[in-house]
Image 1: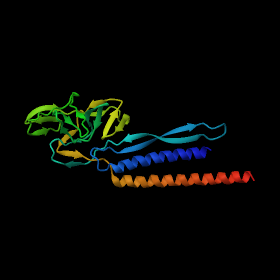
Image 2: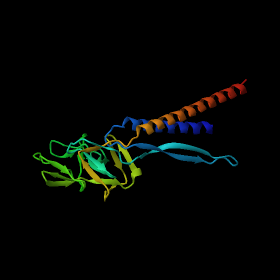
Image 3: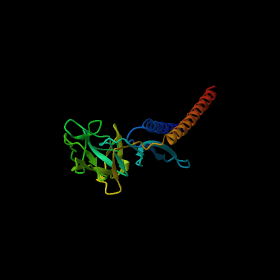
Image 4: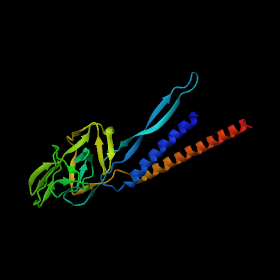
Length: 238
């Protein structure tokens, strides 16, 4: 029976990995998307005296690829791309969240928001306000936002204390239970640009084919094992 359990656990893990790869491919053109991977954990059950142990793997966690993606010029004054590590900090109904998607606009109150309406926060954790009468908006590499040459705020750029604690949420948002800390150096904000997804479609499709073949091999093994047991039961009951 352990053979079937181990194989089924493998199939479940491969299915989870296939779903993750498919999601990466589907978001290859999504602004600020971060590629995900699957982490496998192992459960080992000691066998009876003189027998080998049984090991079962499970895909219980996902990793987030934080590598830099390419940027594309848009010339929109409030399209911002991060060059280097870090995330923009936004306020949602569920609390503060992180994002690399830098397509921002002012709302009816003059507050800088994401397309979903989440408030963009400054380095002090306060909403960023842009006067309605502002004509020229500029954003420096350090995140200082100015209107008509007058500094208004400095956009908050943070990094998660523990990147492995990040959990993906809708709208290219990430939650982190371990908290965040400010980006110290080595990061710049590019005005008039948007960062794409850090997904290599060729590698992802190749991985998808690899996972699919592995799943088919596992399914074939389960079918053969089922036939073997059926024949054994049929032989013993004659």
